[in-house]
Image (cartoon, rainbow, N blue to C red; front, top):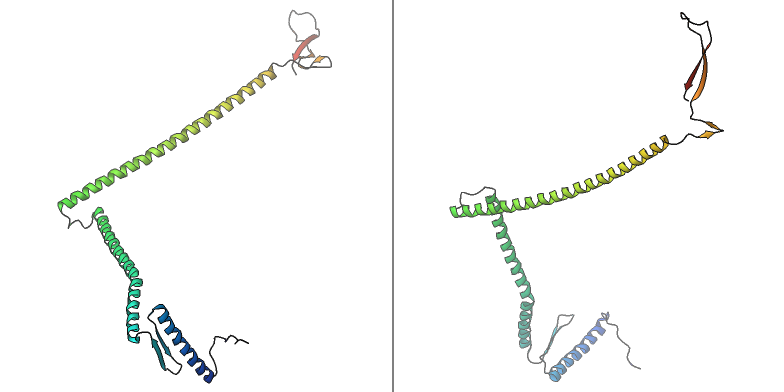
Length: 231
């Protein structure tokens, strides 16, 4: 039967742990030696036991292996740290440039506001005046463009309102014409006949009145007066 797998964990028994350490250390050094011979590699192995005892193996010498290791480690550290240093310096330069630009803009702002002009020369004042005139010109042009745009919008709104008013006026005229036509039709309509009588014909009223005494008049008599009255 083959040997079973050993669990990779700390061996609790100190005697067994020491025996396993001795065997594995010899095997490790043997593999390191084979690696150096077969592959022409420079190999160095350093082992400290649990009792702080040193064991080492080097294909050439441990000193040369350690020196070579330190040199390669320094090169590796420089290669990894160089990009970081370059990036840090780059951002430092950018921050310094932005700080100078901010300071310049603040000075220009104060000068545009009429402050800190005593240190300026005549040429500087003339340049400042030119810049202010150009700024005012740009402001006037922008203001004019905005006013023209607002006028166009107002003109379009007025045209829309005028169009709506004309449409509303047309509707009112049409409604008035329809009402007038309806009124004329009602006035000119013929009388309606109900049971053979004209309902809109004038009615006759008979009324007896007492005669008035007058001189040189025939004797009293009854006068019949006819009176027409509408409905």
